[in-house]
Image (cartoon, rainbow, N blue to C red; front, side, top):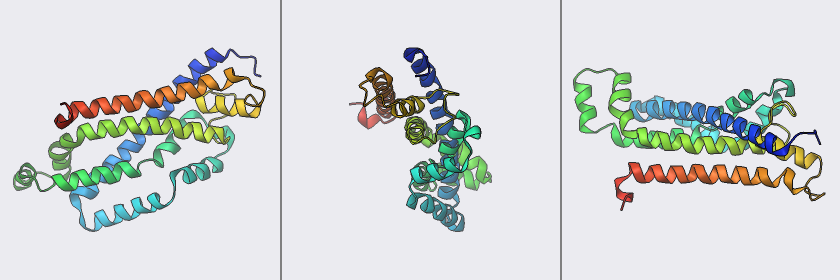
Amino acid sequence: NFGRDVLTELAKATVVSLRIGLVAGVIATLIGLTLGLVAGYIGGWVDDIIMFITNLFTVIPSIILLILISFSISQEQRGATTVAVVIGFTSWVWTARAVRAQVVSLRNRDHVNLSKLSGHTIPHIIIFDILPYIASYVVMALILQISSGILAEAGLSVLGLGPRTTDVPTLGLMMNWAMIYQAHILNKWWAYLPVLLTIATISFSVNLMNTGLDQVFNPALRD
């Protein structure tokens, strides 16, 4: 409909969607990691406040927040980076809860108590004595966040709330264009089927990568 080659558009859209997933994944992982480390190690009222905020985000589905925030941003300002940042700031909840659970089980280990007795500061203990023990988990969480970011962008774009239409192609926008011009009704499968297969392949590949890393980092699964 735009006079563009579908294969070329698909290649460009895949790169942009991967970039959106990477930016969103990094932002969500950094926020979740920071809040989880602080809440899990310090505990007390700090933990209560962070968990209260986390529970608020848990009650409200992330897709609802995404739709509301994206709808409040004008279409001219909805670039690929903006959408990625919005996705990242609404996808950190489960990472924060999981990291906190890991840190709670580590904060009373002997090496952590020894570091406390040595007079090390809280940031030093968190970064050098706790973070290395959950680094493998953080890497796997980042991979899953990247996949979730790609799927979230596709969902927003199908609803018409993704990046600016016809400006920067993404996998979700290609699906949106196919729906607008009724490709599924007119049986123009080349407009949407390759996009679906690409999204499915990326998600499947990322989950395979996560499973492989789990087997590498977890000795109990190697056998």
